[in-house]
Length: 58
Image (cartoon, rainbow, N blue to C red; front, side):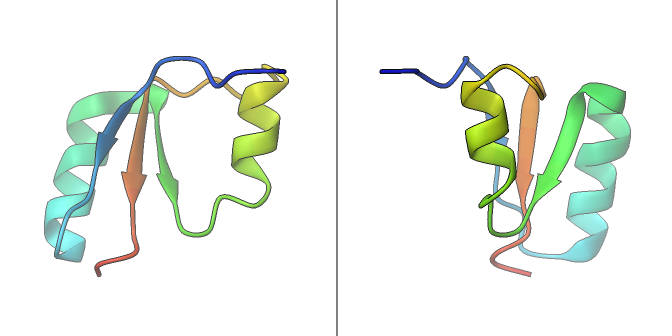
């Protein structure tokens, strides 16, 4: 069973808050909306963002 690598997770409530988090975290941060492509790619280590920023609550 392939496991996800460790990553930080943020769930901002506004687009401004999301933009600030993404800017502060830099290129290792990635926005996530559904994750149907990202999560399997993370398991395979094709993409390994240090931080995910959920857009679900926006």
